[in-house]
Image 1 (cartoon, helix red, strand yellow):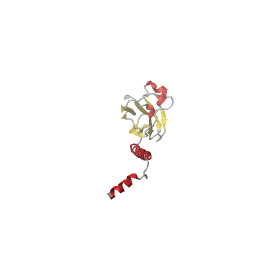
Image 2 (spheres, one colour):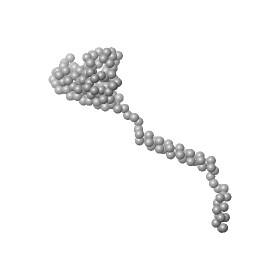
Image 3 (spheres, helix red, strand yellow):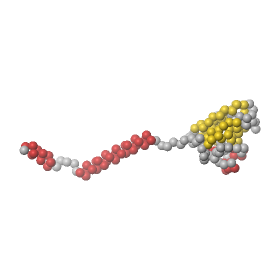
Image 4 (cartoon, one colour):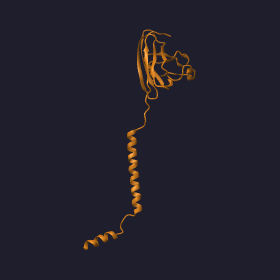
Length: 168
């Protein structure tokens, strides 16, 4: 019976935390843990990265021309730049007004410069029959062209032309 008195004494003690304060502490701890987990998981996932489109060219050495072989739909010409190992002019689809310009050696140059609206004759987006001509270089010169996607700064393709023939 002596043990019963000890248990009653413990039950009758009024030195406990209020139920309301206990609930508030539990909610605060749960919120803190949830916030910590969210920060950890969002750091692991990271942001979505832009990916470079697929645009592949084939070369026609005899015409000093790069012809679009495959492309994703809706890729605008304005999203591409090029880099040439020599000073050269590039002409898209025979349109000299909007596309023909001088690219300095080893400098990344936008493919379209000037009034893009005048380029709407053949379309602002890259199509499978489009082409880029190399002009304005000395005959017999070797030139390496890199096609670059501007948004991701990715080199899509590098093409070597040996003994360029066209001089304009």
